[in-house]
Amino acid sequence: MKYLKILYVQVIIGIIAGVIVGYFFPAFAPTAQLISETFINLIKMMIGPIIFFSIVLGISGAGNMKKVGRVGGKGILYFEIVTTLAIIIGLLAANIIKPGVGVQHPAANAAVIKKVSGEMMNWTEFIAHIVPSNIVESFAKGDIIQILFFGILFAAGLSKMGETGRDIVSAFEKVNKAFFNVLHIVIKVSPIGAFGGMAYTIGKFGFSSLLVLGKLLGTFYITGGLFIFVVLNLICYFNGFSLWKLLGYIKAELLIVFGASSSEAVLPNIMEKLENAGCEQSVVGLIIPAGYSFNLDGTSIYLSLSVIFLAQVFGVDLTLAQELSIIAVLLVTSKGAAGVTGSGFLVLTSTLTALKVIPVEGLGLLIGVDRFMSEGRAITNIIGNTVATVIIAKSEKAIDMDRYRSVVEKVA
Image 1 (cartoon, rainbow, N blue to C red):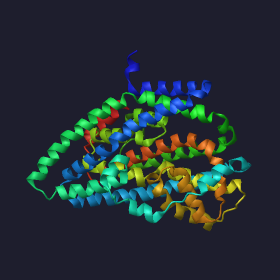
Image 2: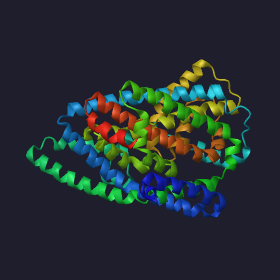
Image 3: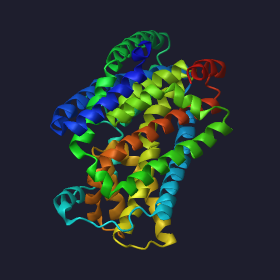
Image 4: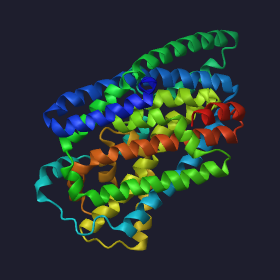
């Protein structure tokens, strides 16, 4: 019975119960959706303040803005390299397995297609969106990239205040601790949130949609698994730490992400766990929030795989030059995935429109199975950002490896 007190065991029970209830009582789906969204909202209400205080305290602890710029530069370079690998792996998997061959495009989705294809990403607006016009509104909406931008500016201003600034930092540390104490209370209901998320997914979409597009779903999860256990595993190995032990350390968070189908559900938890494992707050406070917008490995795999899948459905034979252009376009469009509501379809629409090769109408095919892929996207994204933070911290000598080993390895 003592195992029932462990969070990840409770989350597993919640997920299993959600699948059973969703399958046998599909009418429960609206209530399950309410439960899931309420849990995610509980987490989201904490994200803005925690990111802001973590960034300000982290930069204040870094001592100078040169270090902040160096950490940020390394982060962006790392993000670009790894997401490029994710895009290429998605393309290769789609070309080898060919999940779209033999799949017919259903005309019944025409209404959905019209709605989806009518929306387009405006990249000028996206770039301008980084700078908030109203920071209070940014906190209210939980806009990560705007809070990150404002937090860096605020920390820079605070660093010029001398002793008065240190007094403010001391007060912020106490407030930040209070927010994390609230988070610890909220996370206790995560098994209920995971239950609601799975019950909604199974009750709303059922297993029937998996039969038609099961090959695409299988290809996506195989590709995501290869990326995590080959690419990220090798990156960890060559940097002197174990991916498996790191995954063991964050297993509860991974299960929560799987159940809630949202990587945002554990953003504050991951930040706290990485700091507890010896990573400096200055690195964690910059890399994790930035990674949620610019290091979306799972989303990158999903986008590249979906583009080739739709090309196969419509019988479009892509040349090598066209596939290279897909990589080039996705390098840009994938970075906007976190800044837009309904990101997967909007970014995919933007990509297809930019390529002018594959019919946008094919997006309707992905509606039924997308929810089942969102768990995989979210898990891959959160693992990618956790690994990135440890990598950047090691490169900056901003991690206590003795503490890391004692904390991470003993729980793995």
